Length: 312
Ligand SMILES: [Zn+2]
Image (cartoon, rainbow, N blue to C red; front, side, top):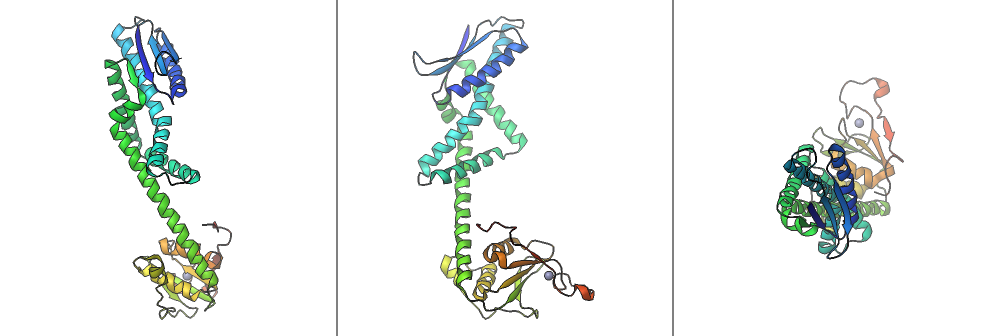
């Protein structure tokens, strides 16, 4: 009789369930007999799988190999599923304990996505490597401590997980800063007196913006406001300068002439900051400098109200 005992406390039930499913498929394919049970004593809790009749219809070696493959496959699935989630949680708990439960849930979801985002080939390769590591180990030993195995023999995978957690924490913090930044800019716009009824933000094909009034004359050049640079201690970019002027002028209406692109980050920020004051030009001589019919001479605008999430 060949026996494999997998010692694991938190994943006992999952592993047992998985092995039962795999064991059933194994029995369905041949007449080998397996016995899979949870053992809680003596010793630490373990899932035990026994190959009761290694004879079967095939050669003894083939049956034993098939049995080990099934156990290795079940272990791999548990590691890539529940165990991965637990590891991500542990990394967050030990390295970033200051996050709230809600924040942690968002970060865990993002980290899971990042880990799962490797292409099909890379994902298959990873699964095969892990399964192979389990199989090779089972050829040498009938007892496996799951947690220790993952930590010490699957270091590459654990490293990948740690990096995914770091990346999702970074993304989460950047997104949070951006939200805070937009919230403050909206506050500035709200408290500012509107100094002009309407401003057109005209984007070049390469995405640079210019501020024009209704007469297509540049406006806001004199408003050299270091609002954004000084408030957020960041290097002033051209986009920041334009945004800063736009906020200082606080127009009642902002018309975005983005041509055939969406205006990139600058336009997206303007949409979030000025929200219901923003209208999108749907085609005008500025965007589309070709001879137009009289009826086309006025900019046609599309309202954005209600199409964007005001809470952003
Ligand atoms: Zn236009």
